[in-house]
Image 1: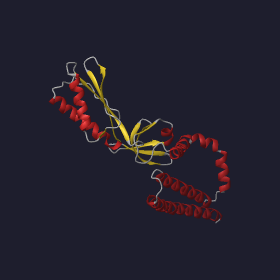
Image 2: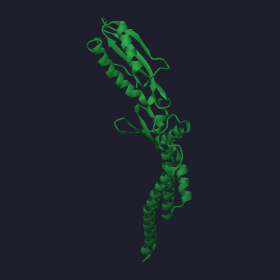
Image 3: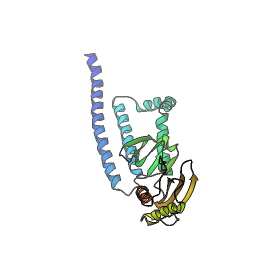
Length: 262
């Protein structure tokens, strides 16, 4: 039958294309896993590793799609020509993805942060888990994963808390006006100097910084190793409460908010 003679090659091509697609996806996954394992064991920068894996996976999938198209009898040259002719429209449709890809290249080239750095950017904060082709992963302190488009992240101001080895801890405390100024200053100095994790160079700063409506404001500025920042922060908060009670130094009521730089 004539229609069968015409349909049979088409059916064979479709079936072969489906088989190649399914097998190809399995092979792509297998190769990607092998590449990932090799890259993980290599001495490459940890920031580059997830990006290279993503690029490898994307390239293999593109090659697979082109192979399936060829099996279906579509002239790849014509297909590429059609894509080129529609390039402007495709560019408009995927301008966000292209911007994210370009942003990923910028992040990997300029290196404002690396994997495992703690950063703030694009309105979010967390530890950098990975930088992929189109997005980056931030892991929050409570173990949530935030996926931020690279274009958005590369165009926003980024605060990197992990670049420097030391950080300055700023804390404000308020007391009633009746409190003895020298006693308060000496108590705060003693708390700071006796803490084993505070650095003495630069020298700790403890002074009155404001006369508020209902309180005198004392400010502590002390340098610590970056990894000790939050430990020292909570230790000083607890110790100030204990020592003020022992020295009978009164907090204003209601207690003013303690301001801490993140």
